[in-house]
Image 1: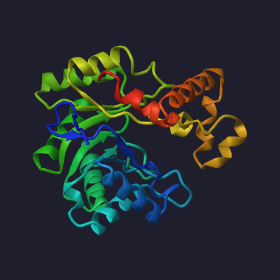
Image 2: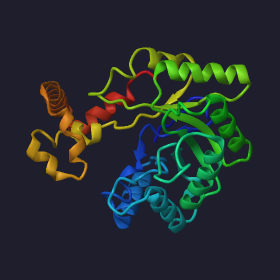
Image 3: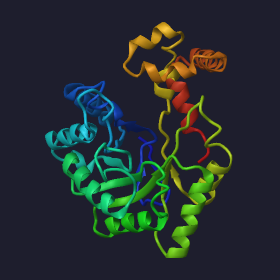
Image 4: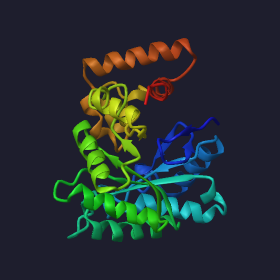
Length: 279
């Protein structure tokens, strides 16, 4: 498997990252373990999760995905050295003080994630959402302290626009703090405008690694959702209805046409397009 450098993190990864928000939600432990085993067996090595996954499911409180990944690592001796683990802090976990990007919460949250993941370090730690109530310098300083302590290897931010990322980079420069090394935007064949342009250009010019999420638009780009009745196929169906419009159907039709020409599946074409993008 060919790997690619991930920005200035100092490490390289295979070109597809597995999104673990399904663990503890639509995937039980047995299914999660089987998926992770197959993922690694095929040469991939980066797994993305978050402390909040999958709080939205009935009976969950957050941390379920990290816990399943941690159990998988524990059940596979030596696996930790073969994979890169990404997780995030900042989403609302439903209890006072358990959200945002203040230093005190970051310090507590990383320990919680390390415990659930059964590891003593996280390869890439993301700030999940912008926190307008916390100075970015405080957040960057907290992340830097975690790096110095060996608890995280690299830092990133998710869901920033170009102005927010530019501001964070400038604060890092002025304060003498390490800047964000990786960005995680929502980006796929359907959802393009928020990343393409100024944000993508900034990542390229500053050598910021990019790890996208919703790369298949919650499964829409596989072609299995074409009408409202198809949404009942999955617990994720409620979030896919927004794609069932003329533009979405044109994208699916084109994907299927290209896939047929290459004896591939629509989802494979969508991911190949993404991996071929600059940045």
